[in-house]
Length: 160
Image 1 (cartoon, rainbow, N blue to C red):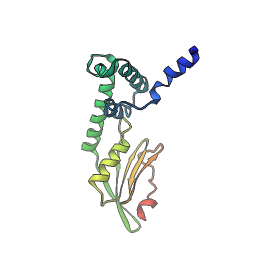
Image 2 (spheres, one colour):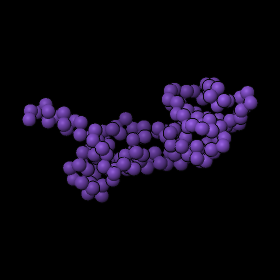
Image 3 (cartoon, rainbow, N blue to C red):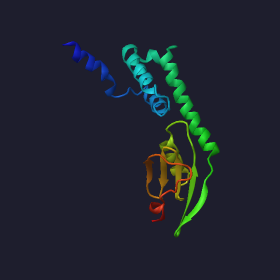
Image 4 (cartoon, rainbow, N blue to C red):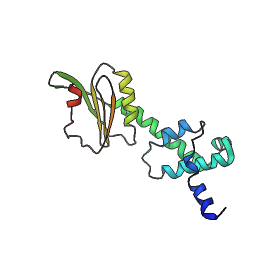
């Protein structure tokens, strides 16, 4: 086996499925805003594959960093949920709620699923600088894109 093939196998090792022991940790940490998160996650995955689950109980700096990122993401979700306030609007014959928040991490989808369960009989829009989550009483939609706090939200889909 040549060295190029060995390097490709090593570089693409992360493409195989994530072990179930790491999934909850990786799901939270992957939403963190730290630009180094992918390197940290990859390092933990590589160490896990080399050393087994023992690495999760060690004092490894990458494991500590990934755990800290996951905790920060979970705390950010809780912070946004505590502070978020919806405002009632009417469009044509439909009423809906709208809220704006600026989360520090990519938690829009988590927030959308939470409100889909908590407010299933109310149309709502949750806007962030990175996109919006909308609930039209049937389907949760996540819209990616840059928004500003004062930008008008297209609510035609909510009015139907």
